[in-house]
Length: 401
Image 1 (tube, rainbow, N blue to C red):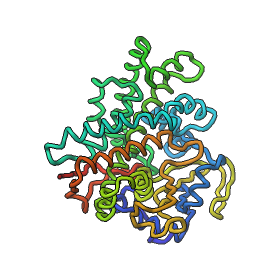
Image 2: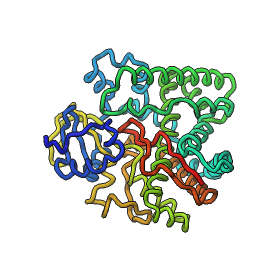
Image 3: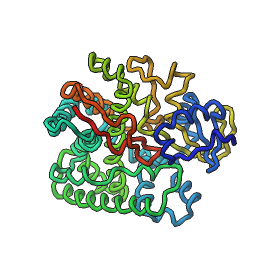
Image 4: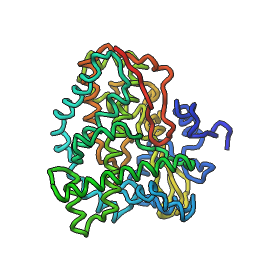
């Protein structure tokens, strides 16, 4: 392997800007077997085909036990993740996803837009007089948490704990193994979250409401579609996935716009550009940088033969900047046409909440432009990125106006 292709996905320099490496890897070996044994895919064409191909499955438990031994699945965080639709294959994936799909239809999500816009205004009102905020903690993180709490039916008086609790641990789905300390933290967070939701399930059994948790509890009570352990794990997944990608899109997007002030000025001058701008921001600096599968049978991908039972990882951030698909891919252009970001994955695992994330981000930027048009980011040249490769986001983003 060329020295120029050696990289540490947890190196702060790589996390700060992984895109130069992506370009080198795509040019040299677009389908590359890394030293960890997994195959890395970087071209848009290959990644798009891979995401929709049924010859690749998740095989989460098999991959974890092969890497870390049979005891690995006794860790609460891994055991819980292993029960979620995120990492399951059909028929379990089909059964679990079918229970929640109706809550995320385009019509239902669009009907939530006025409520989302109102939340945006409330969050801005909380900080407007201060003339400063942490965009992540005060705005980008809070907005999607309130929205997913509304959908799930988490009472308003309980929501405060989720603002303060540690954010989703992206390291749990990173390709680089976690340290014992990181795994212990993930286990504690999982057990705390599970305990809260199990208590809420009991309340909804006694007092049903018109919310998603009540519907899932009722499915679990029938006993044939959802086990108690699956209920707990998948509600936790919906909560985590329901806010993490949106928070990162808002934070990463606002940073990118302020690093490209001509684009920020253009969007402020014409808010009608916001929907297309969100697609460009998804492409330019994706909240989710990679997704993995395992080969169910021998396959050929990008002209390379990959045997059955091997892990394959699509670098979505690399595919989104493929010069074969996008002219000047490293340039942010909110008027770019025919944008097809792979940021929400594809195939049967395409993100359920993709449209919800888009609407939340659209309303977030519309609110910022309307209420805080002179907002500035004093630390835009030295942002603080989270120590995670899979989930790309900022730990903090100071703003003032």
